[in-house]
Image: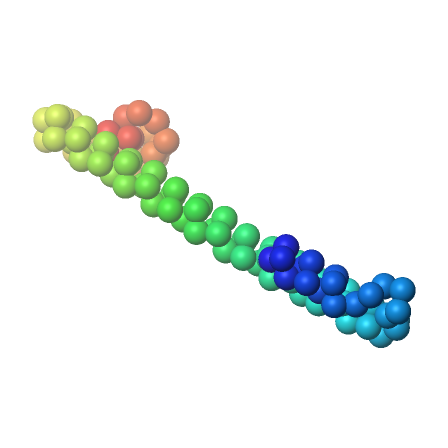
Length: 97
């Protein structure tokens, strides 16, 4: 994007340019800046989505591992507590689910 921005600057010799030409260059620069910001936002959203999916997958895998280590009666009891709100899904016990 910066290369395009520099090209827009070079298209007009500032001493010989009319106000209209200068305005057009400024508008082009603004569009390029907006496009760059939009692209950066898309990339950030994509990184966030990948990170959240990875974290969710890790939690699910940890829950499967913990569940496989617990007797069925304990797993059922933890689910019961979680469903009643007695424990939250933020702590280590809930991570086991």
